Image (cartoon, rainbow, N blue to C red):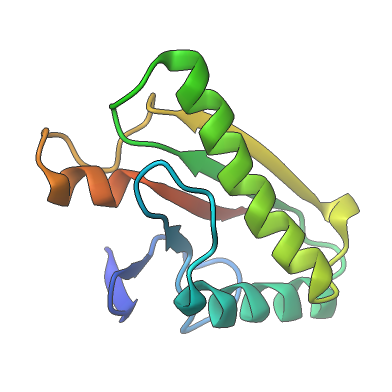
Length: 127
């Protein structure tokens, strides 16, 4: 079940910090963190500091526009931007892995902007 915690941000996992979104969204062709992403990253960093046995995979995604290689690179940059933010907030970079799926695993099918916006994301996946 997907529940909204912050407008424009959805929760996809019951692992990790409770009452905190597990997805961060990005603007088109961007890997810049939006201001509303910072409290989410802070909560995940706090959770990682408090749970040193946990591992986190940050999965970067893009919409379908652009070539495969470009989108893989953009998804990676998005995941790494979140990882860097977590590191700055004290989370161990050794327990965090950044990966990119590019446009291969869309959250929404369709070709409209609403669908594209939901596909431009980084997901927090705890292991």
